[in-house]
Amino acid sequence: MNTTFSDVFLQYQWDDIKQQIENCRAADVQQALSKNKRNLHDFLALLSPAAKPFLEEMAQRSHQLTVQRFGKNIQLYAPLYLSNECHNICTYCGFSMDNKIRRRTLSGGEIQLEAQALRQMGFQHVLLVSGEANNSVNTPYFLQAIAQIKPLFPQISIEVQPLDQEDYVALRHAQVNAVLVYQETYHQEVYKNYHPKGKKSNFDYRLATPDRIGAAGMHKIGLGVLLGLEDWRVDSFFNALHIDYLQKRYWQTKYSVSFPRLRPAEGVEAPNFMMDDADLLQLICAYRLWNADLEISLSTREEEIFRNHVIPLGVTSMSAASKTNPGGYVVEPSSLEQFEISDERPVAAIVSQIRQAGYQPVWKDWQPEFIGN
Image (cartoon, rainbow, N blue to C red; front, side, top):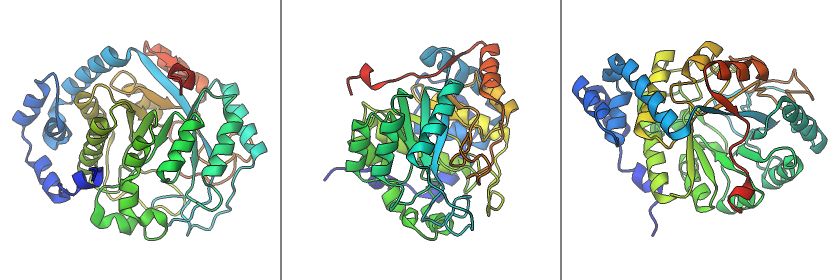
């Protein structure tokens, strides 16, 4: 029987990892920084409170590694929200089924209008996003949307509900570049509290999703946790553990990590665990120092000052001019957002900022013809 990440996950305990992080000392951080190649134990040390005094050194080394591996390039993308229909209750999401909002799913004509608006802004990489409503917003719907916008975008990624392996195979054949799926939190004991109803409440099925994506041969898998639900250090260790397993198992696939911090949204309470900007910078640098090949993405959830600051410190991909509501660009700008964004600058302003930092904005870095997909 083949091993899956679920088997690896069961070998670790949340409280044990939390204690290991708290027990880290300056010597552990110094030892991690002295290495050319770092393992998960080093990542744990770089996550720890003991690493805070070393943040400047971590940032410098993160910059050097990123330039060495990726050059001075920042990939640009935009989300296109297809639907706010959802059959889950999630305590942190504006689309949660128990929120009394007007639901809408974009028609083919509306998708075309939204896609054309993004293309006119210059985007060649689009991320299709939806709520989790399997009856109406499902694989046939996604395939139709992909076929419709493919002439406009050589690079298409998706962030939708977890699917079965055959669905991911179909999406790969439709020339989807990447699938993003977030466990939200790896704290299994409290996961149900955040997801009391719906298919998303099945912790194990969601945990096994990246295995299904990898087995389907997808070009890239994106992971992350929702920063603010539980202890960000412990959750991030488990997220790195997951990436480490996937890279060894599905070694031909590329990987990215995102850092969604909990943002204000309809019916959402304040974060349970606060994470300030210095914490997030430490996390970005820790990921880069641990894994030089990992793509690191930062969304418009973050404020423009912070996004400007981290351009040279490890990030390789950024969203711009994002709308988090279906039809948000031209069809129905006033519909309810999934969450509030922080960086509301137009695309031209972000492109200008990237260039002022000495970096090159990249509109696409992949298309299926390059690999004969």
